[in-house]
Picture 1 (tube, rainbow, N blue to C red):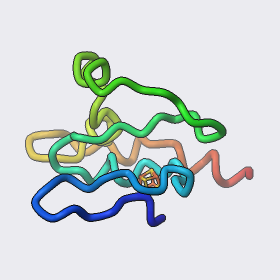
Picture 2 (picture 1 turned 90 degrees about the vertical axis):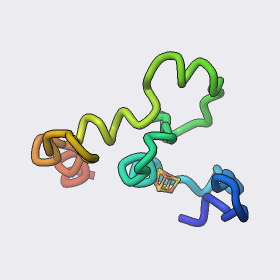
Picture 3 (picture 1 turned 30 degrees about the vertical axis):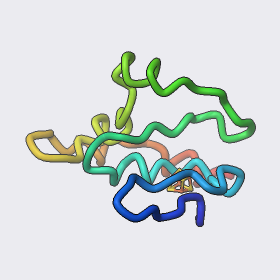
Length: 87
Ligand code: SF4
């Protein structure tokens, strides 16, 4: 959704956070478990990067899905799509 800008030889930067649709796909696809998407889609949530890292929440959605080497694929257990059926 055009949220990130590429930065040469650096991690992408969040350039347009207001465009985020809270779909979690960046967190699900990040192979380094370096992303955390706050689930509060209706408001911005202040976060502290050090606290997120210390709490091991970075990449949590990817871990829950079981995506990544050595993980059991649990994506069939994700019920998020059922919520969207009733919107
Ligand atoms: S949660 Fe979805 S919309 Fe938001 S930055 Fe990640 S991929 Fe883009």
